[in-house]
Structures are given as C-alpha cells and as structure tokens.
Image (cartoon, rainbow, N blue to C red; front, side, top):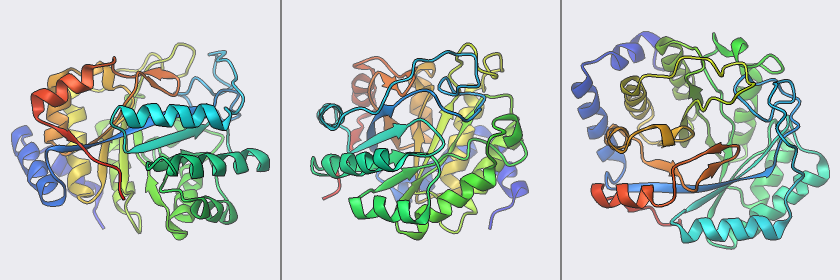
Length: 312
C-alpha cells in the first residue's frame, strides 16, 4: 500500500529526477518506443440523469446537449473498422446514463462480439453494473471496462452528488471479480489541488488490482457545466502526474485522454517520456474535440514511435 505522503513526495521531486526515474520504470515494463492507440465512439449520447459537473451530457447541467439514441450495430462496426485502419488496437464504446436498460445491454454485448471479430480489443463504459451484467460482458468477450473515479475521495462531492466514489469503486470491484480488465482514471483541472490529483492516483494504486489502464483526462471546458470557469492544470503539473501514475502503477497503461489537443507536441513528448504509453485516436472524444487528423502521425514520426499491434 502506498501512502499519500509517499506519493506526494514523489510528485514534488526535482522535475528531471522525477521524469528520469519514471522513464526507467517505464522501460522495465514496456517498450519505450511503442504506444497503444484506442478508437472511441459514443454509442448513446445525452440525457443522462447524473449531475457530473464536467459533463455536457448531464441533464442537470445547462448545456442542452442533444440526445442521441443507441447507434445501430452496422454504424458501430464501421467506426471500429475506421479506427483499426488508423492504427487502433482497441475500440471503446460509451453510453450515457447511470446504467443500461436490459435491451440496450444486450445490444452492447452484440457490439462487443462484432468488434472483437475485427481483431480489436474491446472496451465499454455503461455506468453501474450488477454481477450478472459484468459476467454477461465477460461472456461476450469484453477486454476492458472503463469506470473512472474522476478525482480524490475528498473532492468528489464537488464533482457529483448523484453518486459517490464508493459507488464507483464497487463497480470496479465487480468488474475485476469476473476477470475483465479495468480502465479507471480521472479528470484534472476541475478546481482540485495537486494533493487531490495525487490522492486520486493513490486510490487507484491501492486497489486490490490496480487498473490495467489509467486514463488521465485534462478537463475540456464546456459552457453550461459547473466547472467551465475553473483554472486549467499547469502543463508541468500534468507531466508530473503522468510520471507519478507510472511510478505508482508500473504495469499499467497510462493514457493521455481528453484535452490532449490543448497540449503542445513537446508537452505530449514529455508525457510519453514520463511514462504515458496510450492515446485516443480520432478527431472526436465523445462530446469534445481531440487532436486534428495527421497530428499524431507527425508526432510519432518525430519521436520514432510505433503503434502497438492488436493482441492475437
């Protein structure tokens, strides 16, 4: 078990020492020149009953985001094929809402089977799960379940009141109990402190099994949400957080997720040096913009980075 005090001391190490140490740990666990790419698609959008402060899809926010019903299987498969053509080895499917109705849940299972048949790893996020639902996802062939804890336990009430962080951790426990990999991270730049950010990582690192993938999202401000006026995280603090994630969870993929389009190529390169080894591809991440087409290919050429191939 790692303590907050230990982790925060790591966060505050001299910058170059922190990055060098994180890079050495990264090289012991992964190929430093390989990056895993995921495609992502919102298969049901908007109309969510939760009140997450950062989200355009939350009905309780003032975003008036349009509601989109569940996409059909053909549309999802076509998007997965495009993602694979652009180098993705994993395809993520997200649904808005606290949990899925029975018929929609079966549709998700069909999507998992169809995307797996393309030779891609699969990841979904459908909100809270029961043990029975988790087993159905496992039986359908699901590789990863995304369920972010968002922030520290202490700051969590500022992010959402319709659920608790304990609710989130319970679903993670259920998912892991059936043998599905967990993808769990959080969002930074919502008004929390560096202490909160490190506490979030400590919470993840101290799970019985740390998440196999840890996405770090930089808040994308959306007018109408309750955090659209918050102060952005400093780029150097973001890089430090990536390094701490790598040191606390050496065997996990560390993913630079939302907000990457606000990071310069040089900052992204430092994140990769500090231990990040996973990214989302495509120009859209659910409801927010991602990097423009061609930017990743240009960066990867400069860094001599190659893409991880799908698992056989």
